[in-house]
Image 1 (cartoon, one colour):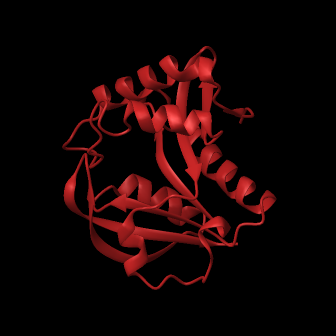
Image 2 (cartoon, rainbow, N blue to C red):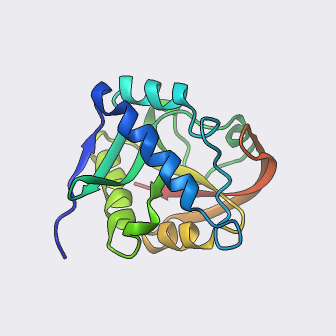
Image 3 (cartoon, one colour):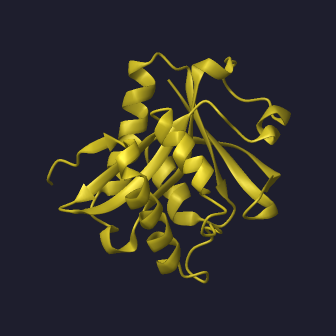
Length: 176
């Protein structure tokens, strides 16, 4: 398998990143995927710009086309605070995965696995105690991906996001 290069997005990548997420949303089939992302709601332009400005947005390509993207930071849904996680950690000791997506044209080629591995590598390099994330209930491909890396399902909660409203989410944690 070829090596997949994952790069931090720069300000000049904003339009391409936004277009990537719009294209990804266009190819989502509700009956086959439970991702409820909506153009310019999630991920919002403000979220993308802020993530790029803070050095938190990463992407990968297949040739000239963007194949996948994700955001890694220390921010999380307020509902995370309502759960007793496996690992006690300050916010600065946690890496949270957001908006990890791979365009359907590139599924099955290792891009999602490479991105999760990159998140784990970054967490180790920066001495994080854990990686946390949430997956909307029913998104089985995402759950299998994370479980395959050793992420543990720690809770199922109702949480509110602008794109989903109140919905059931599964919380995952990878202890480092």
